[in-house]
Length: 265
Image (cartoon, rainbow, N blue to C red; front, side, top):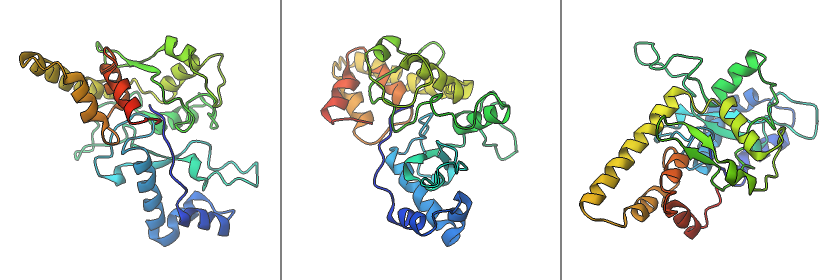
């Protein structure tokens, strides 16, 4: 999971919200036969560099594979001044979270243990294992640090919290735990970002990386780390951004390149 920066709210969304202050998300989706919804979804995907806001899988130029997740419950009407259903900063593009089935109606990975992102979060909410309003239990992509707070475990493909890094980061978002590291750990659990399906996908990135390093060594290419950093991060963004960022951590190639392009999420 990485930080997201939002563009300005699409004009038609802000206009719709102003003209229809009590409209639901379903009302908005039905407007213009869904065209407004598709445009919002595409803008959210572009803001996220083509990645799921939670697990960092790519949209692969198929925005229909993504949906809109409301970080704060869209049904919350406690504050009449805020319509959470139509609030731009509350909308994030997310993948299917392991819900997909193959043409023969089977799933390569069993569920619910391989659900992730909002799919797994919703599963836990349904099971009464998590409050529907989970602010403070999981990072908001807009407020999480742009600094590297997760490490990649090469042995199993899991993400782990870098507790030393977390201890030196000021976090201004909502946190129901004693430390940033605790919130990061809970985020991994709530979104199930270390399910086997995602770990296997990250290990594929490791296989690609290892092959490139081996080829570079055979050619005595000592610039391979800098080259990979530029190749991966010159456009927004490669799949499993956090994994790739950590793979290049040994000589700070990723951090140096990201600093050179003024990376801030």
